[in-house]
Length: 115
Image (cartoon, rainbow, N blue to C red; front, top):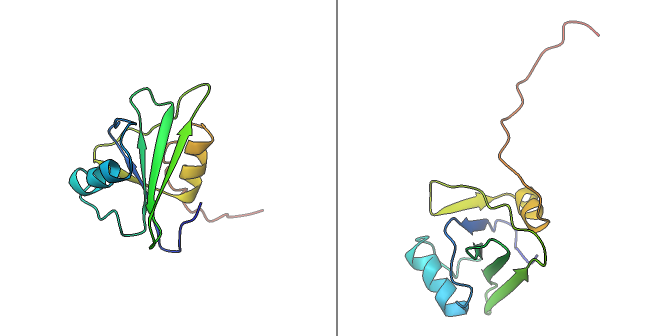
């Protein structure tokens, strides 16, 4: 994907109407997510059934709108308390591959006493 360094991937928690295009999704970014659609971050939306997603991205010259439709299965969309969730590159890869993911707790450091 064409993200510049420092760009983030934001997932909209609520489903949207997939008939929305550039302007409709940019309005959702401003209104619901309270973000600037021209900031260079990627904004990802899904439909109600969870088998389609759209990604809106501003590259400095214009908007990119990527659309994905799964022929089988559904996207494993995370549950969220907020309107949007920030994803890491690894989480994004798992989402697009259709693999379930959940945030994992950090491992605790240990000090071995012997070999």
